[in-house]
Image (cartoon, rainbow, N blue to C red; front, side, top):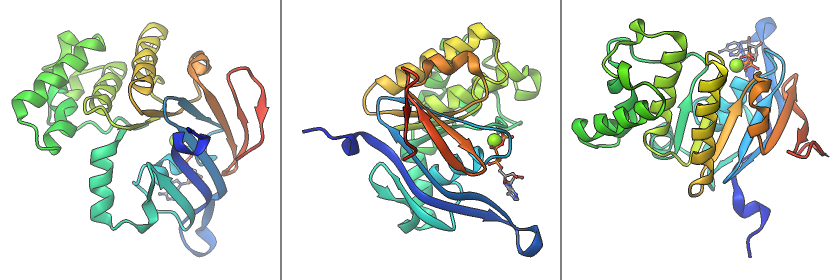
Length: 241
Ligand SMILES: Nc1ncnc2c1ncn2[C@@H]1O[C@H](COP(=O)(O)OP(=O)(O)OP(=O)(O)O)[C@@H](O)[C@H]1O
Ligand SMILES: [Mg+2]
């Protein structure tokens, strides 16, 4: 029998995270609970500075937390060494960062092929897959360009291609449509939706962009470092987890 717990890709419980020391200390995550299911698009929304990027960095194995439990695909991330965390990220997670984090000395194709090369695929095969992904994002004419030669929206699509190219189990996206026009934003959301529905994938999206809220299966609302409520597609409210 399948239970709700079986379909959980991510479960964060009672997360605390502070930055800085002494008087400069900022307590950002204050006992935050968050979960994301496979086959779903889970949105995380809230005012600037409330802790969204910090939370997805913790569940994405980029940042360690001070307290709480972080379970991702059945792995207790707090129990893994930094080497094992890096392997886990490479095998299971895809990221679209708020700042695109493209490598300036590499072309669009080379940037998008990085996860496959890092996994041990040949450069030729990796670049073929990267080009196909870029083409599906309307970037067929830009594949040889360097990031500095691309617009913000085009750079964002390279970052999206890089996140999707190795079919990660969990896609973590920080403002994936912020620099995109409505039509391209819809194309990108359609691709992310396909990724969520194919196999046992889960897509987590931080966004302020209410044009894309229709794509959400559940929306976690965050304020001052905690989830205040969860909204489901029929707009009914659930209790915070
Ligand atoms: N490395 C850091 N060192 C110190 N403070 C930090 C660090 N990272 C984040 N913060 C602080 O933590 C708080 C939450 O930051 P975070 O980036 O998680 O917010 P956010 O909800 O993603 O905001 P935005 O919508 O503007 O991206 C902010 O007050 C920020 O200044
Ligand atoms: Mg942020």
